[in-house]
Length: 234
Image (cartoon, rainbow, N blue to C red; front, side, top):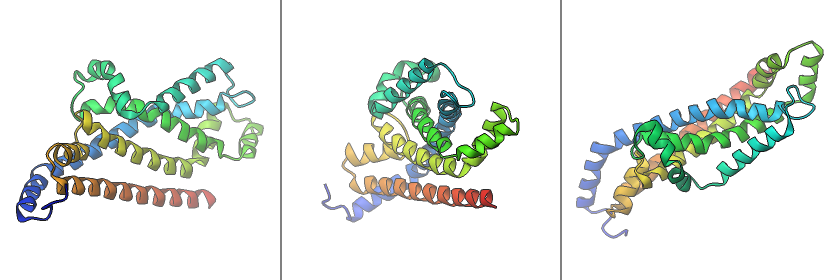
């Protein structure tokens, strides 16, 4: 597999692939990652908050069976490996996107795989809030919605940013796996060239780029979370 990896012929082929496909693949990876994470938060953020505030003795209690059903759905979706989930949701993907192959088509399974994960992360962030802060808001006559939007979410911003970083890097890993089933991006290059065509150097470069993107996103998320935490302390 690693024989002649640094030969001039291999370098020439690799350079041609880099020039012709890598830039587009990086864009596809970032586009799908950020868009899928955004929609996952659109669904997962209110769901995660609801799992906390809907509990008995909390600010918006609901019947226990509702929370049990939601928790069951979330646990089931989180337990299914992503590649299997992609296959299972083919009918939904085809209905929404008109196809099950390609970069845009991977957004549907990515969102379905990510929003339960996001919901759990948001739930964890909300539970970290000091109960005394919520009790103080209640004693001042704040309504449940005011407590959610003016107390819970602002107080959990640093934790939410940290968890958003975890979510986006997880989705990035899913996009790489989606290349096996026709998804685009760096995962497709790594699989099509590195695995099917035995172009090891191309695969290594694609993997290194994925690692670099993860490191950049993680550093950015840590910086933003730290700054948000300092602002809250002031």
